[in-house]
Image 1 (cartoon, one colour):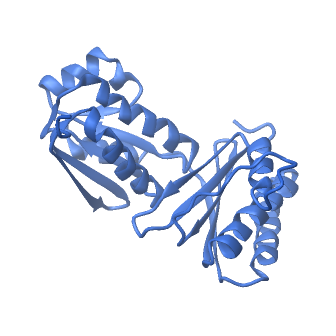
Image 2: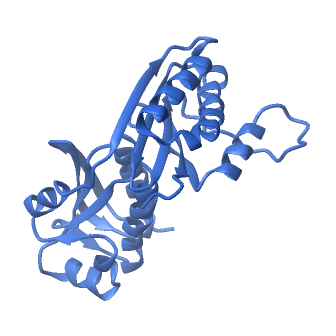
Amino acid sequence: MSPPPCLSVDVSRRGRAMLVRLVGQLGLGNVATVRNALMKCVAEEPSGVIVQLDRTTVVTPLALSVFSVVARKASDWPGLQVLLVAQAGKTRELLRRGALDRFVPTFALVAEALHALQDRPGRQLATLELPAAVGSPSAARRFVIETLEGWRVKDLTDDACMIVSELVENAIVHGRSAAKLRLELRRGLLTVAVRDDCDTPPSRLEPGSAISGGRGVFLVDAMCKAWGTSPTWDGGKVVWAVLAVAGGE
């Protein structure tokens, strides 16, 4: 078996955005590495993720699909854009041939991509730090009730409280970790996210399973427009869920 192509992934901050420089050869052998790095950037909840490809040699054009996959996930949560930067040349031509630049915004310069992120639609955001304590799920529910009342989306309160209870309890009881709750309202969608220090993803069991735990995640799956989990750079994870606002745009 041949070794995977050599590729370095350099991540830095540009204001509130994350800039990812890929230097070397991009092929199927290192697609998973690129995907994991990009999803960790997404989990940091920046204003956007910019991928610079000027020093990237595409070994297998199919590997470029990793950017559309991550872009779709990032649009669900936390509702951010993934943008590509590639000057005129072979890589830019491969993006055009595969029509990828029609689905993932592509620019010639990093400065142009940063400027595009300034037009990000408005959103409302609220966060709460929760200790690894028995009373944290209850505190999280109270925070949800008060926040959604202020945002005038009280019709989602019951569903959001149930989801928050499950996610916070999973972080504190099973992950044995403090947690950070994040609520966000944007474009007719309410997102609920809980970050903790445990890298183990939540298990999903069918109702009626003899094994305890996991059935709450099954309910979250049934109630949400979308949900998922993303690793973080510090070795933890974020579990998120998206609810549609009735009558929202």
